[in-house]
Length: 298
Image (cartoon, rainbow, N blue to C red; front, side, top):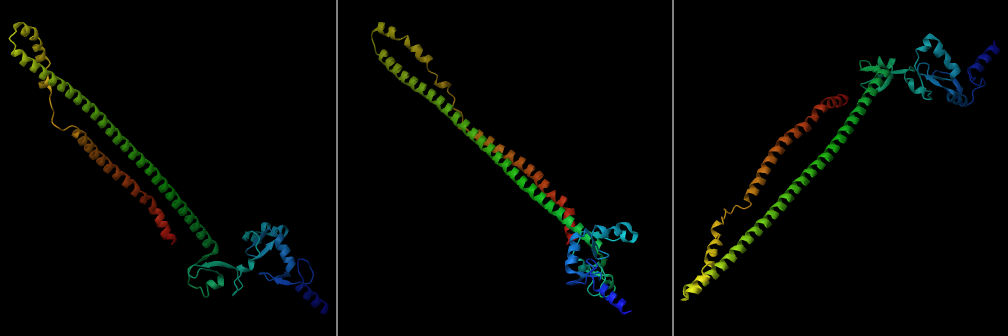
């Protein structure tokens, strides 16, 4: 009988891994005790941890979880050395419930005790909800980045377009200025030509007039007849009466045309601005669902 008791005590204080007496013993959540080095080595060899058994298994000892029907329902995860954190420190039960009111994980007994009546769900359901929210946040972040990228590109493109429009207007302004100056030179040159010819005719008229005056006083009939034929040429060369001076409007019509162009451009810009403004404000329609989602998450 005493020998049997000694045998039981030895089994109690023996490591089931090395089968020797416990050295630097540690207990895991399931209640079994192991040598510190043995359990560390075992965990290093483990390929899965069971959240129901609260133990980690190597490939050999994991097989029952694949073959035995009740064990197949257990939740297997990547090997973990922190399985004891899944045990309620107060009740010693598995923590698999989440209290949304107190925002903490609890066990079943906690849910019917101090958390009774609180909004509780399974840890798996809460995790799924958190992951869904994280996914929504990522989608919203992507949407924000897309909006920022689109807005930045549109601003950049708009600046290029308006810069090009300004360049075109400046070019047209330069073209009109050049054309006016060219026409100015042409008209001034033409007027000066006419002026010069008129001055020449006036000089010629004065000369003819002097000759005629002198001829009228001669008493030599032969000399009078010899000089008289030049007088008809005098009448033919006089064209001053054919010069028409127009009212002094000059280039005012050009100014009126440019003013009319400005009015037309303002009308076009006003209509275009209405369309552009409408397109910009329509972006809000795309953001309605996103805003709702943000409020829902908050």
